[in-house]
Image (cartoon, rainbow, N blue to C red; front, side):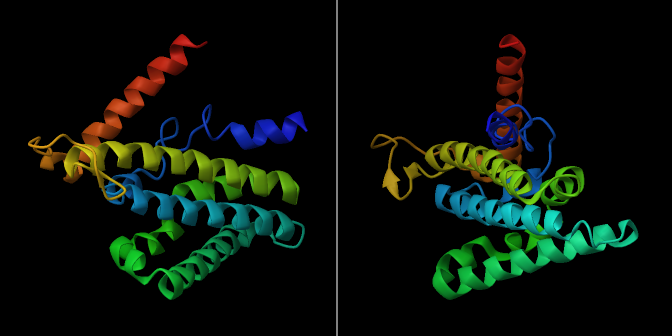
Length: 198
């Protein structure tokens, strides 16, 4: 039980894929202008990571090592396409807002990295927990960045105004350099917190 808990929680903080491995940063910068976008993108990565971990682990006894990367990419692409179709069918406005970024999950290094490093070497249940932890670690970073970008850049949070009347939003935070700067601050703060907690 404690091993499973460790597998689940390690990617959320100790081995966070964005902050401590600098993976998946492009999508973190692209979709964090709104908290709602970040929540949906986080859910997409989480669902794909859990399903990929489970299926890659399930297929590992029958997949030859020479084609393992191809199989992993096919599994990832299958679940990304399924999520994208689901989004278009049931949340079309959100699908339009996210544009091509859901489809680009296929190229997200987090998914392929966890499939290669963990799912190929472990049973199904721990591999799914590892996928869930990686998805949660990715998601909370996206949501945290989106909270700051939406609040400071638009003056709203999930559609509700949060800045006082008369306060002007900082439009620059909506631009890619603003997101990059904010992400850099987050990485620096979390490295300091991690260093001091040792």
